[in-house]
Image (cartoon, rainbow, N blue to C red):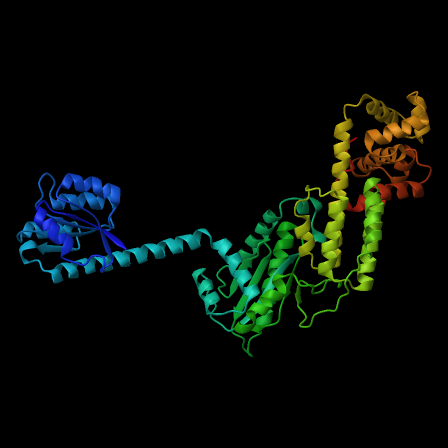
Length: 535
């Protein structure tokens, strides 16, 4: 309901105006009526009416001046002026200040006033609708990315209908043709540097998004959308013609994006896409890729673009006890800081998953649960669960699991080092190891050096560092070995004897146990030393 205020210094006229019309029936509430122009100003400030009906010939401040002041405070206010006689000056001034009507009191009828009021109401309605439309567009513009995510989910959860199409048009998405190809970009995690994966996933996704936006610039047939986890989808809308190979255009674009990503971000991406579909099938096509349904989980993917098979694959559900050996081996490997045993546990998981063709969705959930248990819900690698859920192949999933475990083990080592950094006994132990690097230092030798009982020293050291003395010495020496391999470029034979190992084979076995790879592999692939804790 609209609100109105009436102003007239003639009290009988004021009463007449209050009752001449059935205001409520017109959808108007009279919130104030006054004979004083000064009072009218304060009432206007307080009540903010939509419509003002005022006499021009008021003492102190006339109706024309009042109208000007009202419009200064609210440009959308509607004003109807009343006067005792027609005057060209008044009429001209009324036009200048854009009032809705100019009525002569002596000739005023109920019909005239009602017509004038209805005219003001119509202007108010149009103005409100315009403001609402502006507000709606402004809201969409400010929340466009969030609304696009909501739109993608609507597409995935239901078939395309007129409501969803209307929603798409409000977001500036105008699909003109009846044929579609839905595609999802997938990062090959095995090609990513560890520091990239451990960093902010959103930052990486934004870089990929920028590359895709550049590649599709001025190509209105392509629509880029993201889900709630920033995964990128590409919808190609085109007219399928026998004389033109639309697939070829599409695949050329994907290849160009792949090459630019590789050049600028030094990682590989693949594109999973569904077969050509019509408008009515678009929701199903989006659904297939949106919910990360297993497509080629156990296959080795070598192509840039992969078409999703039309038929699903039969998987086996992992039994409750099936992954118990994996969980136990992983727990022991982490407890004793043995990276080689972590790799063995991962290899066991890979073997049974491939052999039994385990359901990827259930497998991912169980692996996330086991790794979180082993890592005591450590949140250092915050997006670990998202990476695992997004993994499109077994290799990618295993890569993320191993990275999570190694990252946790490194953080444990750093934490223990910081805790013991100021411990005088540990400083003395480290100094002795450094001075006797070429010797085989046992716990008995160290206990004698510290004038302690060997049994007591073993218990004391395990309590102090969280690992036994032999593991500590090997890890200490492997940190030095990695530095010698990458910074000093020493030969493996020289490092073997410099660090007190009897032969190269034994040294390589110890090196692999604590780094996860042989000295030769490490030298070829690592540009920087592994983080095995600080010396």
